[in-house]
Image 1 (spheres, helix red, strand yellow):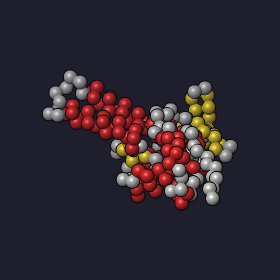
Image 2 (image 1 turned 90 degrees about the horizontal axis):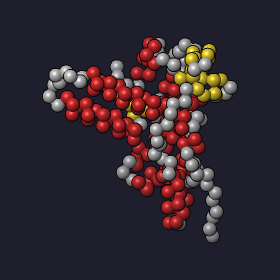
Image 3 (image 1 turned 180 degrees about the vertical axis):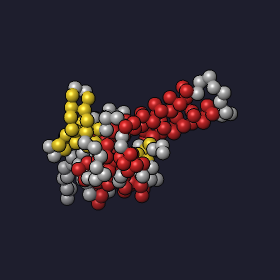
Image 4 (image 1 turned 60 degrees about the vertical axis):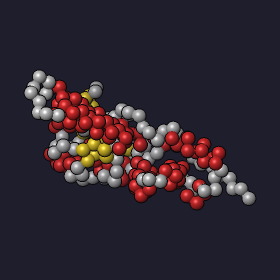
Length: 216
C-alpha cells in the first residue's frame, strides 16, 4: 500500500531559518564524501521528510525533489539588510565598523573566523543592536553591553544572514584590492604579485565555503 506524503519544499533562503541551516551543516560534516546521504539530510532538515521514507521514493520523485532543492542551495550575492525588527524591537547593523567598541571587536575576534556556524548568532547579536536614534539615512544603536542573546537570531531567515555574510566577503575583497593598488609603482619582492593573486582566489572561494578570516 502506497503512502501519500505532503512536503513543504523551500523555494528560497527566506524559507529556511538559521537554526535549520546550522543543524543541516552539522550533519553534513559527517557525510562530506557521500552525495546521496547529503541530499537525504537536506530533505530531512529543509523539508521535514523522515530519513526512513527517502529510500522508498520513486526515481522520478527523487529527481524532482533534488532538482527543486538545487534551484536555490547556492546563494547569489545578497545585499546587507541594515535593519530588522524582532519581537517589536528594531535592530540596526553597526553603523561604523572602524569605530566599533573594543569590547565588541574583542568578542567577535575570539572566534578567529566569521562564518555561518554555531557562533554566527552571537556575532549577529554583537553587530545588530537596538536602534537608538534615526535621522534620514543616519542612525545610532545602543552601546554594546557585553551581554549576548543568540537565541532570537535562530528563527531569522537565511536570506537575512547571507546578506550579512556577503557583506564581510566583499569587505575582505575590497581590502585586498586596496592593498594591491597601494603597491603599484613600488619595488615588489619576488612572487609577491602571484601571492596576492592567490590570496584573491582564496577570498573568492569563501563565497562557496562561507568563511572569512578576521585579521587581528
